[in-house]
Length: 227
Image (cartoon, rainbow, N blue to C red; front, side, top):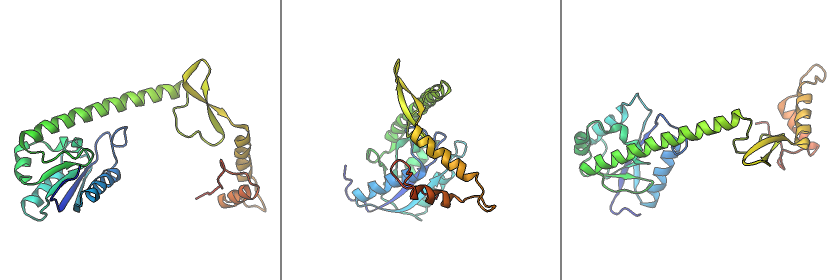
């Protein structure tokens, strides 16, 4: 959705207790989402305010409000990646509403517009429910992954070098890691090279990488690079 007649904006980023969990975004990802939104809507983000979770407090958010109140920054729009980033800042809805008077509050992910007054309270409550659901989902997913790992199942992703994943015959919902003989042989060569002294010196990682590449013993089709 294009937002008309907005020229300058500020971005608010917040690290939450479930940062890096499923469904949440890191500070850099939040910044990228906001920048992408600003480019689509031709809005210049003049300043970002970045907040780490401070035991439920919001010193940076309050600092931002004070800068707005003192006209140090004069944005047309305040952009957040999602409503969940505002739920910790809603201690005093009336104060927030007053200091953001005339400023549109935009969530970059769904472009909700001009959240003010009772709408701010309602949408903040909705954001609280959404974040609580994300927390619950993340906890359930993590518990499931831990249970699978404890039972010897592969939890997904790219198998480590030396293994491949295989679906169980009697349980298609689970996979296990199986040794890949060809890759395992390369892994053994690496360890043997690392523990072999040549003229009193242990080969460097760069030297081992070069030897493997020269022998065409590649890392799944790619050359080895120790960096």
